Image (cartoon, rainbow, N blue to C red; front, side, top):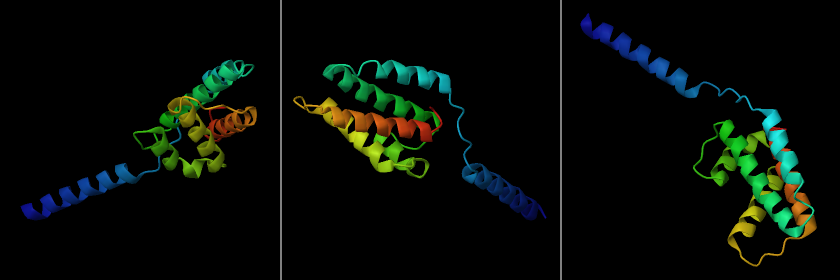
Length: 134
């Protein structure tokens, strides 16, 4: 009799653990006003080549912040982007933008073309929209 009760309790705890573990994640509440303000601030910088570089770098940070708000798995932004694939309409554009940011940060003599910067910012903007930040 005691073994039966222990079995039921263990089974109940297992069911509760499974429900907690696999329940669908709720979308995070994102402060759109905050993200819109930050986006507007970084767009003010695109008037100069240095400003364009900073805008791309800051847009990447902003997108990563939105990914974190969604509690996506991953230690790095790249890992979080992989987790976010199903949320992003144009995954390739976001990856292009992120890779451009990495080149700007890690390669000292990169010449940023205006078209590359515009495409990257468009990718970041779409990613932020897809995540509900803009």
